[in-house]
Image 1 (spheres, rainbow, N blue to C red):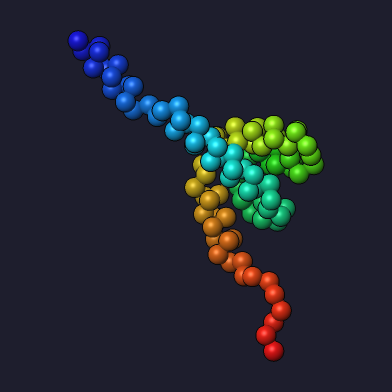
Image 2 (cartoon, rainbow, N blue to C red; image 1 turned 90 degrees about the vertical axis):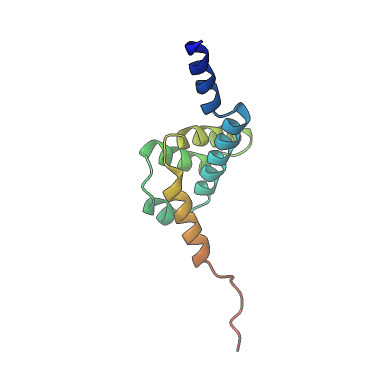
Length: 104
């Protein structure tokens, strides 16, 4: 009976397949946001070289290849702590002001 209890505990702690897919998609979307950053903003983040190379490659690609590259970036993002990146992007978004004509 003891082995059944441990099996149940392991099963309960493991996230569901849907939860894992949502997490992977979230990391992929974060990676896509990184592709949109300027070089200087990207350099300010401390990212692994392999991830930086994948981001630069994504900027070069077009068509169906870009979707595969985004998936690859999402896979690389699993090895990176997303919190500092999300904070940096949130700070960047807070510093942006709408562009328009200056009032006279």
